[in-house]
Image 1 (spheres, rainbow, N blue to C red):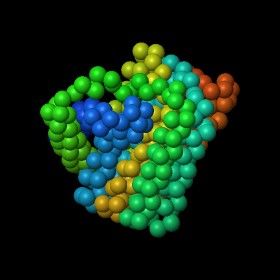
Image 2 (image 1 turned 60 degrees about the vertical axis):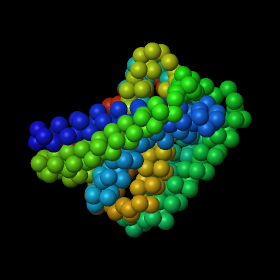
Image 3 (image 1 turned 120 degrees about the vertical axis):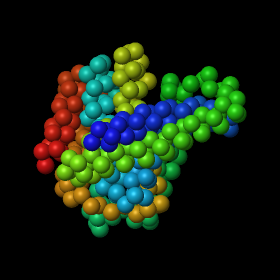
Length: 317
């Protein structure tokens, strides 16, 4: 058991390190390709921060552990709202922008329900369905960039200007470090998680929706908490909702293109996916009641308590 926990911990560290290097190299490379800061922030950074989820899901699907692929994404989407957003709002109230309910939130809810219907239909995400999900991501990105151009006052603090001057050699080294760390991190995490599930006598789905999901959400949590403590509003609701959109459309889309994903754990469809839909839907009333366009501390606390209830129920079941 100790060795399995060690594998998981080393896997987490490698995923965080790999994700960071991948973000840095991707942004530096984008500057080289003369992409605008706005496009880099909305697309490249989002893709790179979803890399841990993507690699863990692909690794699990190839190992025949599709419970981990699905559980990772469903659990990660729940953790992004319940854990990350909850804790961030507890630290300091978050302002909600208009884009949230006019564009990002409807897309997230639409994709969440699409995922539910695709899985409920035949208990499977086929390659065709994966292709459709990935196509929806490209449409979303196209609309996102178009909207950002229209409202050009969009601030993108997450894009580091200093990366403009990065040498080609450094970019290649960072890409190699990022790629290797993500690959070995996902290998160790999936292996360790599988062993822990066997030894604890629970399903891989339970471990995926809790341990792995929180682990792959660590980069978002760290970035959000640091930004909240610094009183920076750079980490917005948009970033987390964007991450949930990417998780469904790119992580599950790409994974099922490589290897169709089957639902093996009944709890995922009977319980967990409803929690994911619930967390997605509850954000809209929270945005307007009682104080409009502010995610206050009590609201953050409410979401966080709901998340702890979810985790407790997963293990009790």
